[in-house]
Amino acid sequence: MAMSLWEVVSLPPVGLLLLLCLPLCLCQQPLVNFESPFPPLLECTRKVHPIVPYKALSPWMSGFSRPGVKDFSQLTLDLTRNQLIVGARNHLFRLSLSNASLLQAVEWGPDEDTKRSCQSKGKTEDECQNYIRVLLITGRRIFTCGTNAFTPSAPPGR
Image (tube, rainbow, N blue to C red; front, side, top):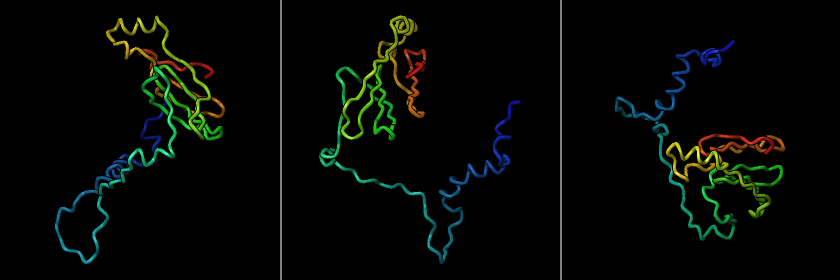
């Protein structure tokens, strides 16, 4: 039996609407300008974070690149193994968190038939690649999903 959103959420619809509008109400200016003996409530303000030059941080930073690999887009931490999993265009990498050294590299690009099919639909060669979109750690396994030249796939056993 399917349940609607309203049956799953324990708030009545009006209560949910009020809850969603609360942040907007807290950030609004009062309609009436009146003097108050109390200090004003905290207003929504923009925080400016300090900007630190790259050179100042470089002694503590490690970098990773791979010739011919572009579009590093997804990262996930595997803290139990002290590793960083990185998704890039047509590639997956496992790196050591201690020094960003490469532990494993897997090439995962679309096959030629999938690429041709993608390009026959008017897509460019750059668009017809496998861009990693999901990286999740579940126990001792990595779940990953990629665009695979507009034919999304999640390989078994990775």
